Image 1 (cartoon, rainbow, N blue to C red):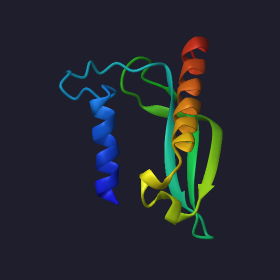
Image 2: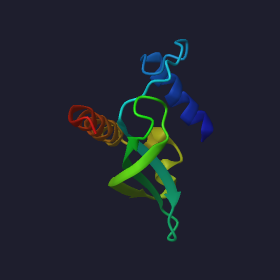
Image 3: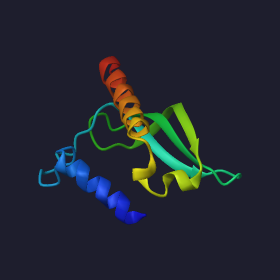
Image 4: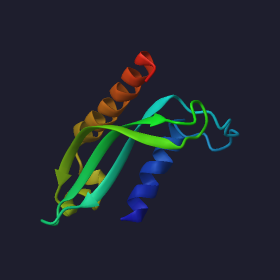
Length: 109
């Protein structure tokens, strides 16, 4: 499983989304989105998105929870290999995440 995740991360770096050669300027926006995963009692995995506020204003936090955005439950077998998820599912996740970030940026919160 971790090989698949590393493979995806390598793809993201190849696309230029994660330039690890740049020096982190330690600046962040006033708000953001946190994604988390946890196991439910029924054994399914829940992916959760929450909006957060940056208490440190433009620094690296601390971050404070503002509001639950959304969640989706998956069978664990669906997430064992990211390549088994349809591209449309991954694209939808990325689109939703970017839409939330742009909304936060535009409103300044």
